[in-house]
Length: 179
Image 1 (cartoon, rainbow, N blue to C red):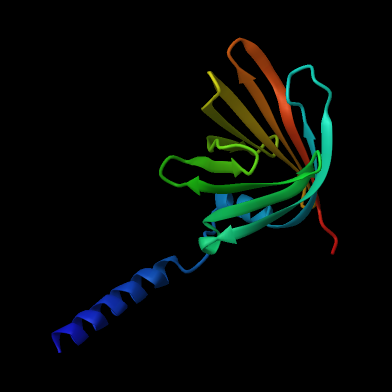
Image 2 (image 1 turned 30 degrees about the vertical axis):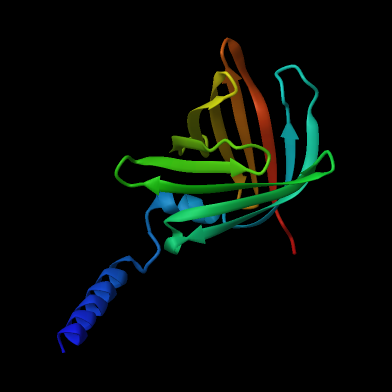
């Protein structure tokens, strides 16, 4: 009987907790993330070095809400020099720090990039920054996500390391897929 009461108590506590978090966040910070959800055709422009010629590839991005819109998950798939690649990103708004936070990983390397930043209402752009070790250097990354319209956005990741000045290492042009 004690086990049954304990189980009922746990279920009741879980239900009470769940009822408080079941609705999607209604704040503008999470609404900005939700607006990005969907399937996108993407054109990725890579500049592997500051003065190197651009390498352009096409791919698909799928952005889905997680945990009732508290976070979004993005999966980009494409092919670079005949080799398939995937990148994954999880982005959310931390209500304690009032910062957007993103974690990015890719099939092309072993680096996890953790970025934090803000949204500017004036420019309709997010700006996230990160520092991470790669090789013998500490790399700096500044990612600007500019929302052009409900069906278009442009993401540019500016890179730098050591004394090398910042350059646009990756630009992704998003067009909402018409399927």
